[in-house]
Amino acid sequence: MYAAQKLIIGLGLLTACASPPTSIPNPSPTLTQPPSLPSTHSPVAPTPILTQPELAVCLSAEPQALYRFAAPEPGRSHILAALEDEALAQPPSLRVETVTVRVGEKVVDGLSRVQAAAPGLALTGLDGDVRVLEDAPEWQLPQMVVRFTLRPGLQWSDGAPLRAADFVLGFETARAVDSFDARRIANERTATLRAVSETELEWVGLPGYMTSDYAANLWPPLPAHQLANQTAVDFAASEAANRAPLSYGPFRLAEWRAGEFIRLERNPFYWRAAEGLPYLESLIYRFNTENIESCDVIPSGQAVRAGELNNWNRQEAADARADYVHFNLALEVFADVRLRQALGVCARGDSATASRVLEELGWVDANSDGVREQNNRLLAFSLAARPESSETFAQNLAQNFSACGVTVTVRALTDGEWLADWPDGVVFGRRFELALIAWPSINQRFPCEVWQTEQIPGEVNPAGVNVSGYSNIEFDMACRRLQTALDGETLAAWETRAREILERDAPAVEVGRSMLTAYVRPGVSGIQLDALAASELERLEEVLVAP
Image (cartoon, rainbow, N blue to C red):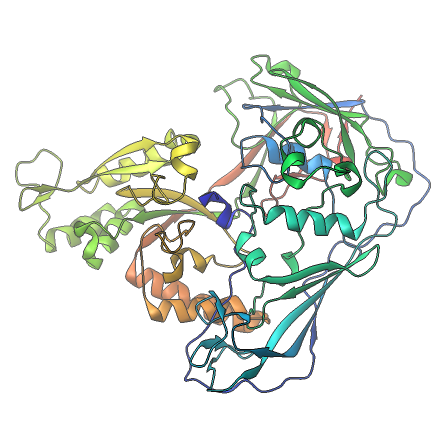
């Protein structure tokens, strides 16, 4: 299992909360709807569009596989964005039922753990309050049921129909130990995901599992007809899954020349093909090219040389991820919350305020060497960072710390060091002093899961994401209320409270929000950066290249 998978798209954790224990009423089934999806397009006669036939996207790294459930690697998400598409015909619907649960059956408790139901177990109610199970052989508990409806007529790129059963196969494959699942925690809290018909699926959560992120509980599909007599494990290792995956998006894979490029071609079975989409005949993803003239688009995070893109159009979007500096609370020096707060102020660039507080705490530069110390302990740390941030943002942070008399040395980690679970990983194994991590929002909300007590990595939860080791019951309860909020007002109130507690206790400090920057050659139109998507290069079916 990989530590990075906990928060790539969303954790979807359950919750408990902050009020005295109370009984859960037996509610009538309720229906709610998440925000609307883009409207379904009706097929119309295509209007001829003048465009060059091909668009070239240049990437710094070549993915080794395009298998949807492989561990993340650079470049893959940009390519998958052109092979996949929105499959739902409408927003999913939610109802909450009351079910009978007997002693020993699986439920999700108030600490978001999968447990066997038993007297004395605390669970979260529909209103966010805690209920303690009374001494009885069975109980009435809430259970979420979500219905998903696929667009009619969806097809794989070989012409086979895309069925609800393909999504069930994707869900079951994601559960495999060796699979990478961005929604692993939600998966573990799923009772069933079943195909109701060719185009409808029903997701049912374990009793007691209440989450505001229910609309995301649909896993990417796998082509059941392609697996034939293979097991999911065999398919995951196959050439078809890794190097020649089927598509249900605007493009399909046509050619992969290792070390050079991947070429996609127009998918004739795309559900919007009757509209003349995609406009382009092909997409080509070039790897490690030195010839900038062979590129039309360079996505965010790719290596470019200063000055070579002066005539290109620069597109920017605020990253959905927020950058945090985490303190390893296992280290004695970080036991003082006032020190953590001061270091946070320093990281944000207010050296005057931070220096004053550090002086008050007894951290002084007695020998005028630029580094503060106390009782022969230098105020000096290493900052673990991913390679892509180590040369820019992390170095800027190190300069901010230096202005306060704090020496910070940036330590660029390999992917293996970064992604590995407890106890092997540097970050998720909690073998760091400071760590710079960009956490994504979850369904556009604050990712409070990152600091929940049950997410501290260790023997019980080696894939936990609370790398600081922060534990505060007040914060845990606010976070659980936030996770279960099904209306915007409640969600906003508990998000504010969770942020206030985190700012006060400072196990980590938010130090900025990066910008996604893509460079687009003049004459290319239709590129729309989407910071909330796995790849910011979405909707490539509508891109045009001036002839």
